[in-house]
Amino acid sequence: MEHIKNYLGSFTLKSRLWNIPFLISCLSAGFMLFSTMHNFPGFLTFLFLVLGLCLVFPFDPQVIRRKGSFSFFLAAVILAGFLSAFFYPIALESRRIGSLVAFLQAILPLTAERITLLAAILLGGASVYALLLLICLEEERLGFLDALGDLKGRLSANPSILRSYLILCAVNWISISALVRANVDYMDDMQRIVDGIPGFELFSRHFMGFLIKLVNTGDYLVDLSPLTQFLAVLIVSAAGMILILTFSQKEQVSLWSVVAVLPVGLCPYFLECLSFKFDCPYMALTIFLNLFPLLFFSRKPGLYITVTAVCILLASSIYQASLGIFPSTVVLLAFVLWHRENTFQKPVRVALYSAAGYLIGVALYRVFIMKPVSDYVSSEMFPLSQLPAGVLSNLRQYFQLVLSDFDWKWIAAIGILLVSFVVLHVRQAKTKKLLTGLLAAAALTLALCLSFGLYIALTTPSFACRAMYGFGVCIAVIALLCVDFDRAQIPKLACLCLSWFMIVFSFMYGNALEEQVRYRNFRMEMVLQELNDLSVLDSQEPTNIQVTGSIGFSPILENMPQFSGALGRMVTMTFQQDHSTWNDYAFYYYYGLENVVTVWDLEEKNLPLVHDGYYQTIYADENNILIHLKERGSDALK
Image (cartoon, rainbow, N blue to C red; front, side, top):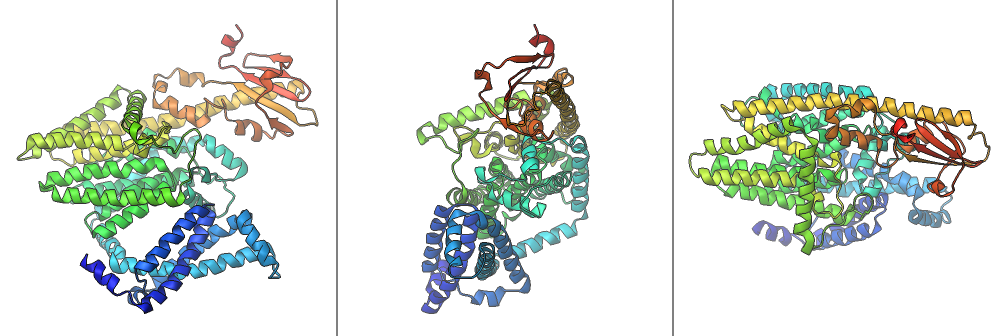
């Protein structure tokens, strides 16, 4: 409090005047940022927030003289440049900005493109001052670079960390080699390959949209795989190393620790994320962002809270399904701190600081970035009166999916790890063994529940495998804590078995996708051959086409007993079997069909039957074609 009083006491008339250029510079950056998100109400909220800060706190530029350096200035210029580059193409298409540009055209003898470019350059240049001042203020008050320097020294002093990271990267890359070799386009990938449009704005994933354009070096997306999968492996392996650095007490990183964190990247739920050729490195980045603040929990509270808030804000702007990773990991961290130090002071403090940073990050995202969505998922939360029942209902469904996704071997290995977690901590405790056991069980329960993130409080959450990858990170933390104990042969064996199961599943999943693609392409070619033989696409007029029914799955996959669990769910979502049967983009765009219009009402037109074959039935007239797919030709013909 005394520090705050002194800080406010230094607020003189001179410092008040210096707040004016800071305010202008902040608003320049804010205008570009919120314009790219088409969120003008958010910009107004940002305006009042910055104005309030400028009325209360002094933003003296002397801090730039004290802490400024060329690297800080370069960082501010690069950030401003990114904002300008992100702002320019969107501003060209914005109607609101377009009206302002039209007004300026009446004054300046320039084209709209040049005026917009000039505005982007001027706004970016104006924003450099605020960015530089904030960077210098952060370093003076919180010392983020000093903390990074200490971390760098720790990494340099321990060669086993780099060696373990390379081993983890190698195992992860080899494990997904079948998925990479299969070269399967996920349902969302097909659309982006066709039109090159990211389309992340619908779910307010603006930071992902920015990163993907940056990596693709342009606004039009192209398929960069397997580069994207390789980047994802590097990032998710780094996230696994953060867990080891945070939780392991071993001076040298052991091979058992590497085995324990393999579920971070190889859990079936994250494997579905790796199926996204365009999205996978950014989904991996959300794991890294959720775990990165843990490296600072023992530093200054302000630094830890700030880093947590920023990381959670960025992770929310990439993929909201990751928001269970940080809280579930913090719960286990708080328990471990209590167990090691036998006091509640530090774990409670860490938990409170973590909650503060997490809530600030989520609140900033909710207020300034998120737009409500109601699609196949909804951003609407349960009313307060229905929240407990709604959360319990969602949790019940999530855990039922876990039990049905994994066979008994997986469940047994996870069960052994959960029991071992409690037993090992109770055995090591010299006193309060009953309390230790109760707290260990409570920490496990709470961590597993929180691993599904804020989705448990939504009225219509996503239950897809890719929305549950926080569960894999939670299991990895539990396994890591178990193998860190001496004389823990049983949990080590369970950890080894579980990781091996996941490696085997990774190969199985990649090969299953390749088999289903082969079957899907065969069925598409059968339909196209029939249409060609019937000459129903010869008309020069636009032809209406509707596809109904389903091709089902390859007989090879249906014969596999493993297909009844997570494997079946993941293959289903890859090809969107429950909606468009084989993915409309593959059929309509990959084969060069011309003069084709997709419609949804041809079943009501009673079109004449022109072909009834083993795999599909075709109804058609001069301008309409209805194709009904059959899952099993012999059954359909009975």
